[in-house]
Length: 362
Ligand SMILES: Nc1ncnc2c1ncn2[C@@H]1O[C@H](COP(=O)(O)OP(=O)(O)O)[C@@H](O)[C@H]1O
Ligand SMILES: [Mg+2]
Image (cartoon, rainbow, N blue to C red):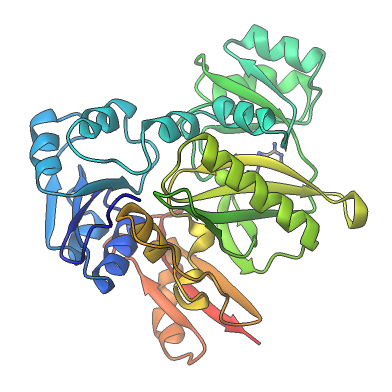
């Protein structure tokens, strides 16, 4: 087994958002220091770490200095250029590595891998032009369907629902009208769930309880663990996650988002997408699990044994505070059953994740 990085070691984190902030906080508990690398001046993670570098992801001089100051590098943001990770990998271990990132940055690669491993996904077609889109809607993939950019989408950005064939041109224009899109059949799901799991340097694997997720305006609103699915379906979801991680030589925490269709014996899981990082649907683990997803990730990246994922209450609920919802902080702070996490962002723009609140339920 690779030797674990001892307390006092420094982990480099690419990306300075709330995920980087919570990773750094969790690492600090284990004596692991963090060095954040991010381009944005007002990065929430800068507030809680001893070191940060403010530079662009393609600034090789800055990347080299950064690599020499840390014992391992990880990321909190999946759209880090693969070339950046390849450059750093020549100087320091990067966990997860370029292979995982390359897959998770492209919806087509994610779906292809899931299917190769025997999992189901929505039916899809590769779309590089309006003609491709019209052809797909005329034949194999009838509306309703969802047109998405293959890369760089998040919180529903880069997506357009196609309700009727006649909407093709409008949908194509709505996502920017550039090659590199995918058309997915609209899935009439019963619910959405996610598996947040970790794979260690030694190939060890550990998943948190399957979590049920409710979106509002395509942004995660509420997560509850455990999800209301059968044990068999849950096992299937965890098994798919494990096999995807193995196929990608993955090290660290990641999430697989699923659609659940049908019910009872007809309950089925469709892989929607993979996040090669800690995930919003795993925030409940900070208070709700023996080990949080953030600590688990730092353990994996540092080569430590993975921690216990035992849930600490019959159910745990996490609600995101988006935009001006953080204005409620005084009321939440006065609620003895509520655990508030504020990301320290100065400006509450609409749709921006400002914090979250977790409750252990009886
Ligand atoms: N094919 C689909 N069928 C039904 N709903 C969908 C489909 N694709 C996306 N959605 C809805 O939109 C949300 C965001 O889409 P997703 O593919 O996860 O992109 P991202 O999270 O990167 O914005 C999903 O969680 C789901 O609620
Ligand atoms: Mg998603």
